[in-house]
Length: 385
Image (cartoon, rainbow, N blue to C red):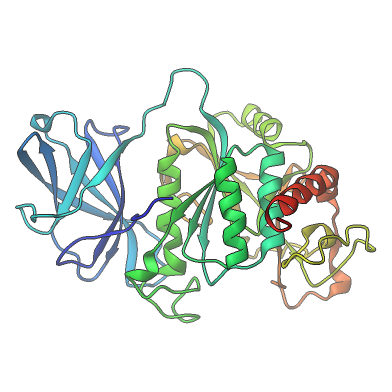
């Protein structure tokens, strides 16, 4: 687990998350994913070490377009690495031209392909953010096992906190290799909001810094994973025409050449409405929601905003947000619901829709045998031991 992901910049209202050598647009350009106060940011400088010599360069700050009205925003601190710095492996950022003694250095990651052959992974899932003593253990396990069944080889989880039982589950998946936990300690530095806009829950930054975490996750996997899947832990992209993500993405890519981001319509399945006739009445002693039992979704609202989530080619992405890709190369595609849907099992979203108006949808059940087997295995290892 990463021990110190978020690094404050001394004498400023800025926090550094990760640094990447991004040469897609300019040689030796360093992109530092950050969280910066829009009203009080100052001039920053990047410092590189070449032996015993420190080489400094002026930085630019590029704010991401969406911050939902909060004071702090995701930003890219951009530095051109001087040629005389040679090959650089770390960077320090200050508000003065001279580096501070003892100023922390961030490791610099490369965005280049790990190898010229096949990608190290085909699908990586980004989950942000886990907070509020999260304890929905059963749905958490079911989501992870669905990702595995559908083709995910790694799930990155940005965790602020969770229940003790869920921590045991995280430890199990981490030791197994499916999950990598990023210690997302933003709440130690800022007054974080638990909502998407200040009127619902005031704070310094949107939803535990979700947008920053998503951008970091995309960049971390740029040279590793063919695709990155971005959704919340209560969401699963469920293919309708196919049985797995690989076949689905092959179908979509071949039919839409040049498309680099794929958006899946959000379908809310009400978790208080049970529709399985007790067929999947399992795991009663495990806390959380059993997604197999909730098969009634709300109809889509005509002309209303739909909170779609994405599967993207990370190498085409420059900036990403929760429901859109503000800056990317290539085309975008809204995937028809006849091909795949975002299965979102949660509390009611459209309060005007009566239960009698819900649409019965058992698409998830085609995975039930494999899902039950996998969940039973996890529970026997983690919760029964």
